Amino acid sequence: MLRLLCPDIYLDSIYELDLNKLKIKGIKGIITDLDNTLIPWGESTVMPELEEWFRYLKENDFKVCIVSNNSLGRVKVFADTLDIPAIPKAVKPRRGAFRLALSKMGITLDEAAVLGDQIFTDVLGGNRLGLFTVLVIPVSEREFIGTQVVRKVERYILKRLKCKGMLRY
Image (cartoon, rainbow, N blue to C red):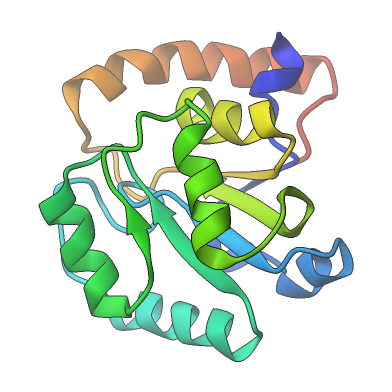
């Protein structure tokens, strides 16, 4: 079970993601979470640095799809601003939304990476399909009350993964 909760890599932020290493692995598309991965929970402003990062992804021929458990309105506004596809109310870690994202991007399981800030939604969901998973530290401490509770369990899991030498950070 611990293996399903272990990301392939663990980074401080999305900006540390090495696109060249992803290309070498054959990755062509990124399924990304929204809240506390790209922007702080509850905010909707796309900062210039984030816009530049998305521009860089497109320039390097990466396809992107947002997969979020958040509502249609919130996710759509963000996705429309960046002109990328999105799947709201994804019910992660269920696999359906991840499969739909692959279809929207026109890529296979071997060509996708999942990028997110939560072990029990993003990493578990991606690992259940055999996708390359990237865990990032949340961009903000402010979050949904249910997520705050889950974070305590995540901290324990991260310690276990580090102790067993399973976590590359």
